[in-house]
Length: 123
Image (tube, rainbow, N blue to C red; front, side):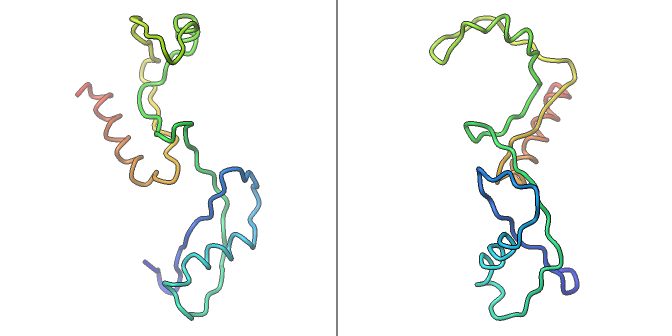
């Protein structure tokens, strides 16, 4: 909701765009995306920012204990997608990750926080 007469709007998204500078064209796109909601109201861009969303290759968030890289390289180097191992994975003690939520991060990051809480508290 607006605060006073100020409304925060939208975000453009281009998977292969790594530009770190603000661009006028992105502001225009954001306004075009909400034009059905604002109608003919006069608008003025006060400011804009650039940010990046992280996501994983399969588009699922990465949530859980962080693996021990050296252990994985040593013990799982021969495994591919069709093989299985009976070796239980090793993780770094007390190091957890809740990342790569992409466009749905507002919802999935909260879910991830609950999952991490359960892991940390051994529930």
